[in-house]
Length: 194
Image (tube, rainbow, N blue to C red):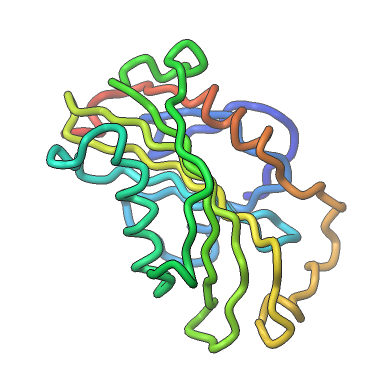
């Protein structure tokens, strides 16, 4: 499904809802993804948004938890180390800015990683903006990640990717689109937590 316009979309079978950015593609229609993830890709750029239900990391202090998850993503992307990953900012998100009032606290992190796609040698510089919503009462860390490539290596498959024909031009996503997602994310059914 491709989404245009600002309307709420059901996530995780209706357990959550949120306003997604315009021009998104539901990646689950293209390939299998884990049940704890919702992944949306921009229809014409390499931008993506990932929403993940993760195990609550009780041993990690709230103020350090966003950094913990960023470093975990860097490890998965084989982008660990100061030459491949950098955190630019971490700040708390005031609860009054969130529809998801069940979260104990929320943290916004911005950083960059040098990431290779599909095990390629070429690495792209990607801005990574993540928001961590901590839900200890459900033993869950809810992680929202906005991947925004800022420099595509000429040898990357992304450098030669073409826009699918028949699609209307969709504007690139911005941090404002990501913030709207964060501000409108709502829990609709606690049964998702078992």
